[in-house]
Length: 108
Image 1 (cartoon, rainbow, N blue to C red):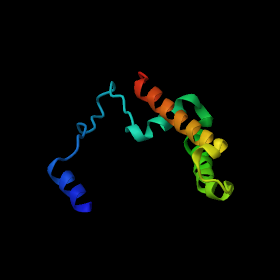
Image 2 (tube, helix red, strand yellow):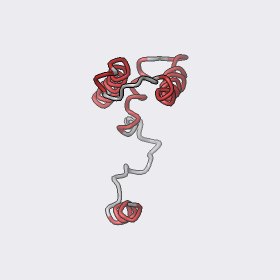
Image 3 (cartoon, one colour):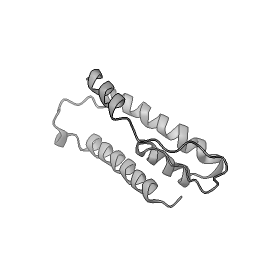
Image 4 (cartoon, rainbow, N blue to C red):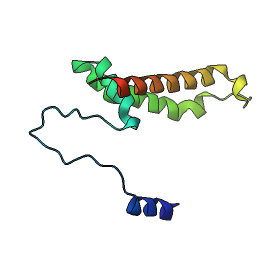
């Protein structure tokens, strides 16, 4: 797998933007798609709450994600037998997808 990735990177390359031009004030920097939901959260939490959106909330979600195996100690393993945990997971995924879509389609 590493050889395939190396081959693809070496021979196909990646699309890069032009070098930064400090004289171009019309440039609108945008993050890659996998950071787009955080980009949108910075728009929702303005000013001094940006720390909450960029650091605190993602950290809390990662800690909860880490603790899920310890919190969900039920006997049943089928997804339909765990509506609370499955619903929470799908809700989180839905919020991330929605924020990503909003961030990608927003003008600024």
